[in-house]
Length: 377
Image (tube, rainbow, N blue to C red; front, side, top):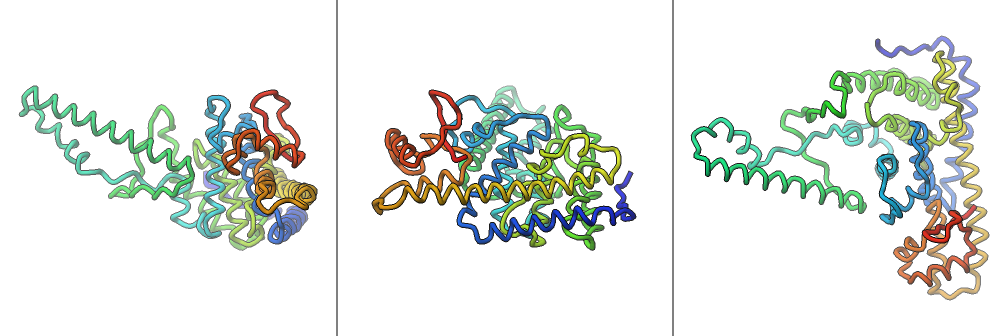
């Protein structure tokens, strides 16, 4: 059944819409002129990525996510951790682009993985035609062809591994070329429900996006969040919906200088409200989630400003070559830091990193004797 907009009860939503809009705009105005803007944005990325998995019933420790992002895992990464890192990288990708890129055709196709597969190479084309005339070859010819196919498949695996390494290291990787017929690659029936028509569901969500253009931005965001959850657009990337809505808030100017952490706000809303049977109750819960996300952002921003001012007092009468200012910026941009991260960023020894931590007076966050990490509270 198509998603329908119920605009008869909008008067009951005006109060929560105005309240959420006020706090969201206040946060964005504060971030725009903030000395800790970059650190605030990075911390919000980490917090929202962990909250996205929490909403799906998976626990991802913020410490593990930070270390995994720095390629300094202390244990084998779990599937949940890699998914949280995918959310983190997607948020960074959205924020690095122009505000109107995410909801454009190119941005939407890129983020949903519908840019198409690689164009078949000459070797692949010739391999498709080998089966028709295979009977005319002798056994040796078949063996040579089989060996050639295996070599090609290993070459494809090596290319995928090389591309993955570049993506994880943060290097720019060009998008894959589209298929000639512009059709998505067939999905694996063991992983995907083949009866789940994602194209139709995406079209339905786009219709909601177009049908709410005349509504206030925050109310439109609540409708889009509710529609994404109700339609169940993507099978394995439900967390993309709130990121699209956060990009919409940025595109419309309400959150022009940061990417709203809607997963973090929804985390504070009880599940009974988020999954209420009445659509009006769900919309009220989503509006409260947007409000709570902005309130949490204000508190986090003010805490970072206070922490920065306290740490800067320790920088007085320091040498111009001191590494402490760089450590302050690193600490503000991550929920926590390890000695390995400090060594790599500041190019110092392990003992030098520990000395800098002691001079700055950072708080040890893990309570462990080994694999320790520090941060500001």
